Image (cartoon, rainbow, N blue to C red; front, side, top):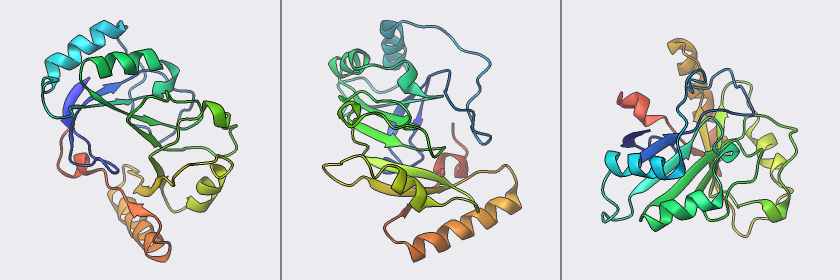
Length: 201
């Protein structure tokens, strides 16, 4: 857990406490999660640590971001309710392969694989944004089509995020390709990992 600024998507620039859950049902090669160590905590212990890290709940809409790993493996509606009772706004980033709690305030789905069975529509909490990690081989429309079987009451925001490959020269190529794609398909927006650009956690 740490207190920083949200670096990606619609909430870029907002101060937030990040709770990174261990474990994932995918193992993507570009993932920045360290999977080897973790600390078991109760829901109440997590909230106590959140309280010690960020602004007090009396502040205007303090944000907690649940991420991972894949947080839907551990987070349920009862935990989100607990955070709400403590005065927090709750966002989650998920890979979209499992149902997310319906009482989230914001849901980012960042799909990593195609072909996986989606949660049933009745279980599904509609995403507020769809954020696709982009490299030279990505077909964003395929991801969008993958989710088209779900009936959304409103359309999620669509973001493309250039993949950080760890290679500065390749990253330049990926960013240029991503910008070019968005210019040709303006329904997508650019999401940059601004926390990496300004070197904060």
